[in-house]
Amino acid sequence: MTRKVLIVGETRDGSLRNVSFEAVAAGKTVAEGGEVVGVLIGENVSALALELVQYGADRVVVVEDEKLSQYTSDGFTQALLAVLEQEKPEGLVLGHTSLGKDLSPRIAAKLASGLISDATAIEVAGGNVVFTRPIYSGKAFEKKIVTDGLVFATVRPNNIAPLTKDESRTGEVASLAVEIKDLRAIIKEVVRKASEGVDLSEAKVVISGGRGVKSEAGFEPLKELAKVLGGAVGASRGACDADYCDYSLQIGQTGKVVTPDLYIACGISGAIQHLAGMSNSKVIVAINKDPEANIFKVADYGIVGDLFEVVPLLTEEFKKLKVHS
Image 1: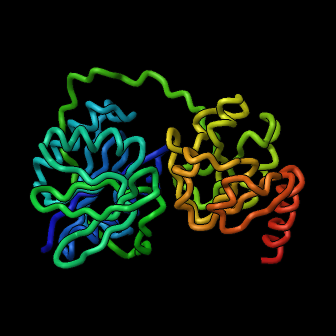
Image 2: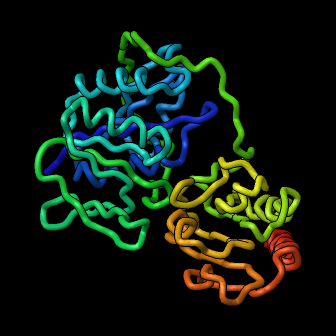
């Protein structure tokens, strides 16, 4: 069954986030040969529309307004509902990001629609689009299908591979005028506490520290390794509670969920709450002085040793590899 599917492109600092391209790929699967329409909402975002087309969208609808320069629930809900009313799609896909987790249930409630959240895989089987999503903090997975109405889902970053960018692709880019009104919240200022560089939720490599880093200064070797590998730095809740770093770096059940290609856990014991946020990483390396630490049970590779000795050695070896590559 072919469908028209809308995908919401998400922007940050004037660029499209990688999860936008993953949503396009997911939309292609849901559409089953139908049309995939990108949606961009914001201020001065029309210049980004072509990139969505190059990653697989057939055309793009843009809603621009100065009131949409920063994300607000009311503003983006009004804009997306207007696009949905115009396009009347059979499917809708967003990234399972902070924005997507806030916006998608609001849209589902307005449309009286079901919602499959945090999908990690999508396939077509037996005439149905089958979504796989984790449950019980990642200890099990369930498969879901939509039997009636809008096929509405959010996809977890770093799980669905984007299509190859094709710079020769072209598609229509249309603007939709929407009156954004009665905003109950207005963003006056954005104060960033997250570290600069690679977005933690989309990073392919994450170097994470726990209580074993001992201090704020203890994160410096981890930052150096992350810089060499082009990755991001994360932390356990224990490290955040001890004021070694900001809570924006927290990974776990009450923090961010990450699924990088490589996750290096440094001085992290492996509490179940932390494992819920990183256990689906493709390759897990654990560095801990305690050979009985729980983190070794989920690790693909384990190093029993002092992280302050091991991490600098790893950094130097990776630097040598980069020089010779």
